[in-house]
Amino acid sequence: MFFIDPHIHMVSRTMADYEMLALSGVVAVSEPAFWAGFDRSPAGFVDYFRQLTEFEPRRAAQFGIQHYSWICLNPKEAEDLGKAREVLAEIPKFLSCPSVLGIGEIGLNKNTPNEAKVFQQHVQIAIDAASQGPPGSKHALILIHTPHLEDKLKGTRMILEMLRDFGSAIDPARVLIDHVEEHTIELVKDAGYWAGMTIYPISKATPARAVDMIEMYGPQRLCVNAAADWGISDPLNTHRTMLEAQRRGHQLPELLQVFHNNPAEFFGQNPKFTVKPLTVQPAA
Amino acid sequence: MQMSQTSPGNLTAADVLDAYFLEARARLIELAATLDRIDRAAGSQAVQSDARLKFIHDSLQTLQRTQPGRAKAVQELYSLK
Ligand SMILES: [Zn+2]
Image (cartoon, rainbow over all chains, first blue to last red; front, side, top):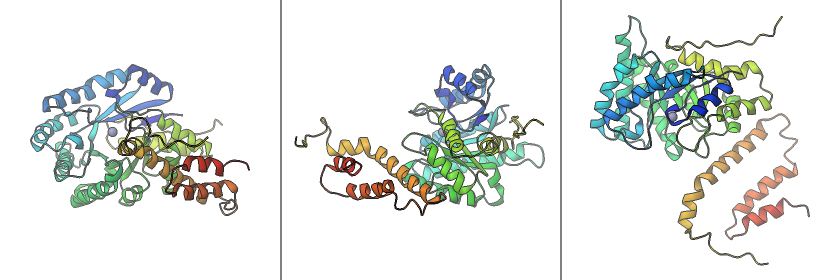
C-alpha cells in the first residue's frame, strides 16, 4: 500500500519519523506552514519558510520521500495585523519555490475579525498568483485549517462565506478544507470543496469515525491525514485509518483512492506535484 | 468496605473538569458514532434487542445519576448475576 500524507508538520519530527513513514509506504508528504507553539517575528517566518522549502525536502529525500510545502502566516498569529502585513509580503516569492504547492494552512482559530481579515488577504494572494503565471493560469491551490472543538462549526461557516464572497475568482476544486468532522463535512463537500479529515488524539477524529465518514459521504474529494506535529500526535494514524477500513472489508482500489490517489489528484493540479494516481490491476 | 469520598489528590472539581473534559467529550462522540455505525449496518433491527446494546443504553441512564458511584454501577450492569 502506498500513501501520500497530505498534512504533516515534519519540522517537528525526527529523521526516525521520516524513516518510519518510508517504511510504511509513504511516498510523498505535504507540509502546511503552521504555529511553532510560540509567536515568531517576521524574520522568524522567513527562516521557517526556508526550512520548509530548502531543508525539509533534503531530509525527506534521504528516505526517498518527496516533500512538498504550503506557505502562509497561520491563523494563530494573525491577530497582529502589522506583523501579518510584513509576513504576507514575503509569501509571493516563496510560492514560486519548486516544492511549494500553494497557500496554507490559512483559516481561523478563534474566529476573530482580524483572523478573518488575514484569511481574506491570503486568499487574495492565491488569486493574484494566477496573474504571475502564463495566460489562463488558475489561482494558487489553497489549504485551509478549520478551528478546533467548539469553534469549528462557526469558523467553518465563516470560511465558506468568505470564500463565497470571492465569487468566480475561487474554484472550489482548488481548495481543500481540513479537519472536517461529522458536523462540518457536509457543508464543505456540498459546496464543492475538497475535505480533509484529521486523525488526532482527543481533539479531532478517530480512525473508526473517519471510516464512518468515508462510508457516509463517499470517498470522492476526501483525504485523510494525521496532522502530526509537536503535540501528542502520531503520523501512523493515517495508516490506522486505512487498516480500520480494510478490517471492514473495503477493497484495495478504494483504499488507494483515499490514501494515495485523492491527494495526488488534488495536489497534482499544481504541476510541481509529480506523484501520479495509481491503479490496481491483477497480473494477467 | 464503604466507598470513600476522598478528593482526587489535591485537585479541585474545576481542575478535574479542566483535566478530563476533552477526553470525556471525545468518548461521547466515539460512542455516538458507534451507535450510528450499528444503525447503518445490515441487520441493525435484529440487534436492537441484543443485551450489549441494552447495556449501553442502561449505562447512559446510569450516567444521569446525580450521586457518585456511577462507574461501580455501570460495572455491575455489565456483570453476570
Ligand atoms: Zn496542521
